[in-house]
Image 1 (cartoon, rainbow, N blue to C red):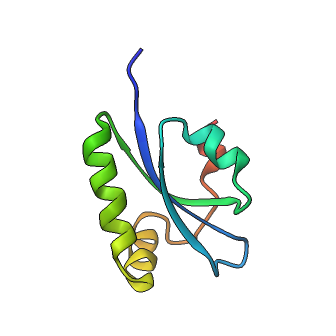
Image 2: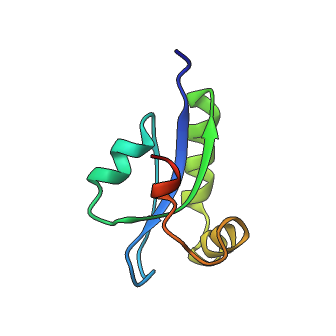
Amino acid sequence: MKKYYCVYIITNFSNTVLYTGITGNIVARIYYHKINKLVYYEIYEDVIPAIAREKQIKAGNRQKKIDLINNFNSQWKDLYSSLV
């Protein structure tokens, strides 16, 4: 079975908090997060570029993260249900 790693951004329902992370099981990770709206993700087959991308996103300012989300998910819909 092939392992995948996801870099993701989640937010709260009022879109005021942005949290970036990496996981090998995005469904479980989002399910257990207290911040509960998945608005962005990228999938990688190798953990090294996934970690590098997570660090790159975290290093960006809030506006860069907002732009990334807007280009991927302009309505800021919760994407969790598309994964399960």
